[in-house]
Length: 84
Image 1 (cartoon, rainbow, N blue to C red):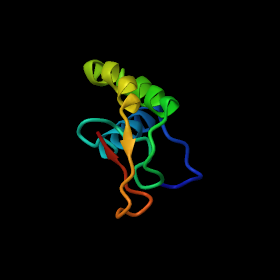
Image 2 (image 1 turned 90 degrees about the vertical axis):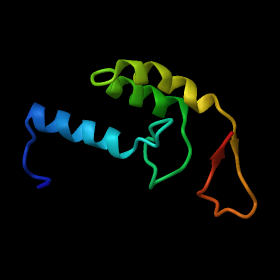
Image 3 (image 1 turned 135 degrees about the horizontal axis):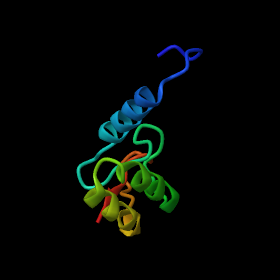
Image 4 (image 1 turned 45 degrees about the vertical axis):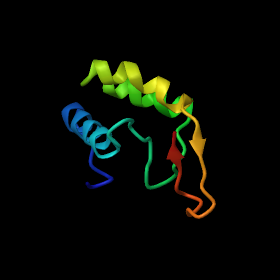
């Protein structure tokens, strides 16, 4: 994508949907899986807003996901978290 070119609304919409698909981890949608492993409430809220346009049932469940407890394992690299 050329950073100096303006995107049409449809191109922007398609790009946003693609980001949500790529970041879909199956049980939750990560805000930035390659940047940081944490899922904050604000991340879930913005993901839910985006999903509300394409997948309402999934959008409704997203904000509840970060409330799950994250467990850090000593043997794992610091960027790896396992949810219980």
